[in-house]
Length: 201
Image (cartoon, rainbow, N blue to C red; front, side, top):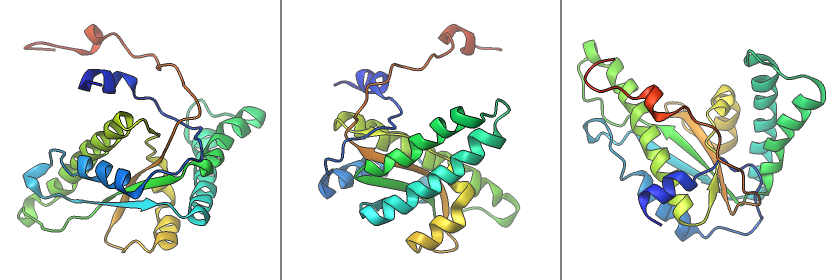
């Protein structure tokens, strides 16, 4: 699978088979993640893999709670009733996935003067997004599925306590990792001509 095939094969997977994913495979994904470009080579990241089924169950309970808020109140097109229940239940079903990964921001060395320190935080977010994309594409190449979720950050304190994550480390994203039990179609994208500009807007 070449890089373009990998990119266009990626889907957000919400249904998984319970087949285990080897620790060696998860470490390959982590190696792909940390090969990402990052500001000043500061490498402001840590990755927490969760493979304990009890912890995964607790994580998924948090996901259901968060997505109840996301679909039920946060979105302008909020859902209600059975539609809300169906949307939220998809995240509880992720408990079947054999692994989860949390991408965390951990700025180990402040490279900028105090007057520009805010940029370290901005660049760290960019760097971790690049690392997550590497990890997700590597997962596709391994025959695995993922689903990049940012909303768990709304319950960062609960997740931090559950997984003993230090107070100075920020949880930015979370994804299940496992063998897909669905084959969703590609979501629609805008035409590339609509969003691409040369030399001026």
